[in-house]
Image 1 (cartoon, rainbow, N blue to C red):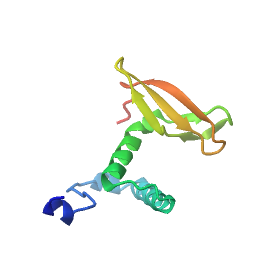
Image 2: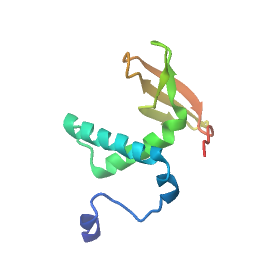
Image 3: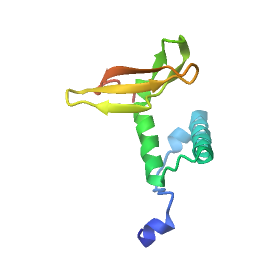
Length: 117
């Protein structure tokens, strides 16, 4: 690890999210991620900082591909993919787990959609 990396183990970089920070959801998202960090530490999952940042990036990129469990009919609370496999044909298989009933399922999505921004 270089001296620069040792002086910034959280890997924070210069950024300006002022426009997002005006929205209350910005801090709500931060609090949710903070709760996830505490849950990971309590469960002793053992992610490195790099693995954590990659997982959060993957989670945020997969948000448009959330899906509802049709086993327990929990359409109020969609689930985010817990795993994806990108195929060469422009599609992906997303893997899900329902927090309410534990049901697991897959769904195929075109990687070109949806573009939500």
